Length: 260
Ligand SMILES: [Zn+2]
Image (cartoon, rainbow, N blue to C red; front, top):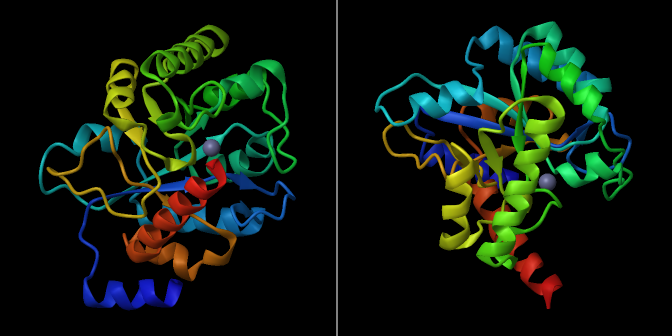
């Protein structure tokens, strides 16, 4: 899949725009493909800092409607597991790279473990991460609900509960939202998302182009262990788009099959 993606990039070089990187775990010891070695993550953040391209998600969302902006990269994390403070935050702080952390609030509020041995963050640790001035909290629904399975009423409840908890427990507004499993929630639920958030992200590995991108359907590029530094560089440059598309299609098929 990666070889085909590299060949595709050669045929159609990625345009300048905004690349949003999606991370899940760092040093979590889960063996998941999205659970990165802390040293690799630190090297990636060092390189990103040196490139001068890293910006907050809010900055890139503000800039996207205008055509012709410079190539920028925003770092995001999903879910809300405690390895974030132990292994990711130190590298972000050392290299002064901002990040948005999309959290599924039910796991944090009830201290329920995530699948694959994911220890939940605490509200206190999240508050401390925010106080570094580098971390911004977004919503990933309350229960990590796949949005296209929800009625508009259920979607509203998920979004309202998550938003209320984030505001109440750490005193910040979750401006940004990420669809769990990167699955789009349908037009009715997207309207609910738009009522509560300034932006919403999916999981398609692609560049968000200035003047064209829909901030309620932002593309994100997931980073896996197997990317190492070489494929990380390609993704930062906006490449590996074919991998994202194939993976997205595969995930949808798997998801549809498992939901039966
Ligand atoms: Zn998630």
